[in-house]
Length: 121
Length: 162
Image 1 (cartoon, rainbow over the protein chains, first blue to last red):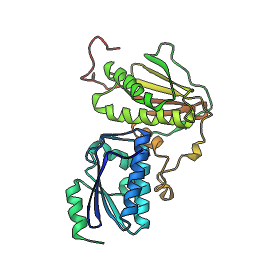
Image 2: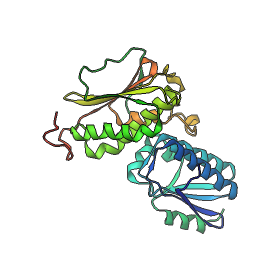
Image 3: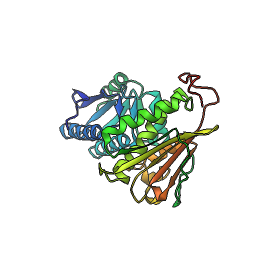
Image 4: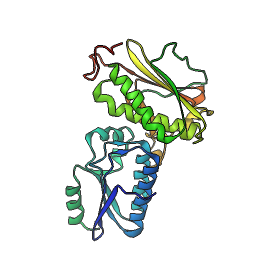
């Protein structure tokens, strides 16, 4: 199933991936998101990835699993990754699972992009 | 964070639940199930409107686990969803047709070695918000409870108050 809710903009090896779906609860959508993120890494191996979650209001634990999988792939490829725009309602999910200690998080994608572009890998 | 309990015993089903219904294990039925439970709890004033998102999340985790893990994705097998409340708390119980699970299979998120595992966070998320999280029948029945709000929810009507 193609992922029609992930929009990619690349600036050299700094990639902004914006999730435009509010409810990330459907298993087929979650699988599609994971596959789309893997495809991005295939295309940009040493990536600086900003994943914009500003539109996301709900996400299940399965999404956290996909984010972890992506994080591990990025690290293995000597890249970097951050989450941006995570809504306050979702922050407890990261805190109770201790993933707030794993992911670099920025309040806005634009700010994260500036940070990454100002400090190339 | 409440402690997870997994009991071999059968649960005690209520005599007069507000909702007691079966759905087949089809994921396309999930929105209907979530809406039925959320609307009931909000409508009765048993759930604070501000807690709606947490309830949706917990229900989603429980329903997906029951359908995909408990019933192994078999669309011919039902899950039973039962909702009731007493003066202090509401309870949602969801039963699947499976054999339960080994509690030791749930990763400890406090363990650094488990932090980067790609599964096993759903129970912890539920336990962080609920006041009681108990599995019966070895894990095939999940019982989720939380205290009712002290003030009626703004969405509750006087007629639907318990």
